[in-house]
Image (cartoon, rainbow, N blue to C red; front, side, top):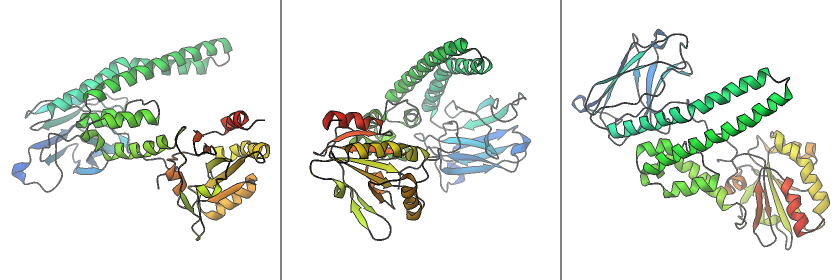
Length: 391
């Protein structure tokens, strides 16, 4: 079930392009070598982890005496991540590798660990291929740092100024306007740069990383860009999973037809969403849960709609999804005073059918089956009903 679950994005790793293949490799085939020295003493006894773009560990090397060595067979089309950890901290920022078949040394100043020390880590790479992707990714990061980072620094500065001048309303108002202007500029610039690189790398490993950083204008924009990408980008499981979720959202958005789903309360009672459709009536589906604060706060709005339009052709169905138990849902039904139709969907199948990732979500369906509204708030429902049914 994918409804109403926040995905864990991993460790917040920074990208390192590596060319390697995982598995049992003969020593003579180990043409990719990654070594490090001069690492902090705190890392001794831990490991250097190599992960694929889905944050799955595909290799690791023990760190001893401030050093490690990793050997594998090179794969020129692969893109991987490197993480050095002290407890939960990532201590090595992005390392972009250069050269083809050369030994390359780069000294890295950490951004997380030992911030007061100008410590440099000596990390070396030797391999046979992959330099073009390495250099392109490096170019992407450098352009973002050059263009966007100064704006982000300015936003932080304004934030501190606003905090210290909170007793000066006119100054705070001016700072807020400046903050919004710069934030919009930074967002547009970030989208422009990432979109440019994504369009140039629609079918390689760099494209996978860049594609996930593009600031998309909603689910439909993401779906369109994904469908225009190449097979390499589309084959990434993480991007594919997001695409599948967003596609369902697009297909159940305004202007699309009603989509039916079968619900089961886990105790043998089943019902379909279509069971609650009545000829000539509007159906408002409310996806909610007992533990969801915003869902509970929305109940008075639904109650008002039911009282005002319940006798004029409106049915409301509150579907309990992603719940701990049926008992918890039924207790919440009593606590919030639901007097309209409701059903506990044990597997959240109905929420999955509508691509519900966060709650509350309301979907208003016209008598002819057209979806008139899909959103996180019921406030606009009355506006639509007033136009179609009357006050």
